[in-house]
Length: 64
Image 1: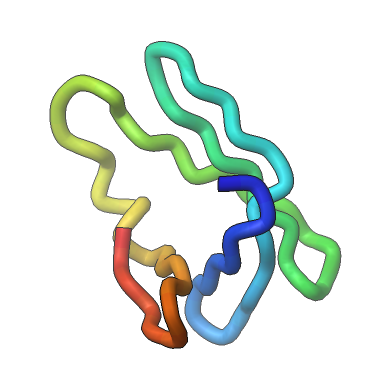
Image 2: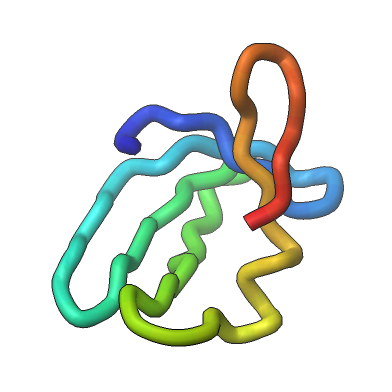
C-alpha cells in the first residue's frame, strides 16, 4: 500500500511505510510533513480511531 493516498479531514497524505505483523501499521506522511500511524488489528475489531481515515481508490474516498 506504499504510495496510496490517505485523507484525514482536510489533511491529505501518502502511505510511506507498511508494517504487517500482529498488527498492520501504516505510516502516513501528510502534505504538511506531519506523520501519523494507522494501527489495524489483524485479528478482531479495529479501534474506532481508524475510521477517521479514508483511502482513495479510483477517484472515490473510502473509510477504513
